[in-house]
Length: 205
Image (cartoon, rainbow, N blue to C red; front, side, top):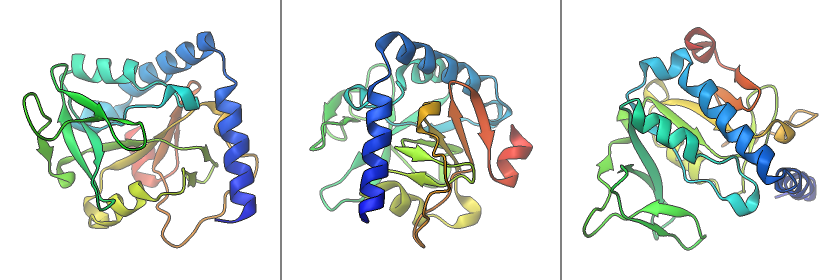
């Protein structure tokens, strides 16, 4: 990781943390509404969605999660394994949850009320967190590469639509550096609505 990437990551994390609770709630509701009225979600039945980290200023995914359940969508959340691999397990209002080693909420994969493993090829849309994004669909994450490795396991023609969730303050003023292993997003949803990057996203939105 370059010093420029570290500086950019720190600046955008600070910007999202500085958003007050009232505006945080407004942004989360606005992004959730934009997602649910889109053509993308009208065609999706299985959705990958993470549990956000409020303490780090991530846009709250709970309003979107509850709307997806109400719309009858199957929702799966990521689980990071001991070897660093990431898989998705179904989450319902009854699913037992736990914090992983990074403090992120995940569905339990064993025991009573555990989540059911979902084939990644069955996901229609995958929402993913980000620290910063640019107008070409490039994403700056936390640097661990879990999502890029997960998506990279899937045949390109069978990948879900990849959509970032963010606040507008996370939009980078300049294009982000893109590494060979970085997988660009198809679209991003913020409190301002959708922005499509790929051809397939533009058709659906």
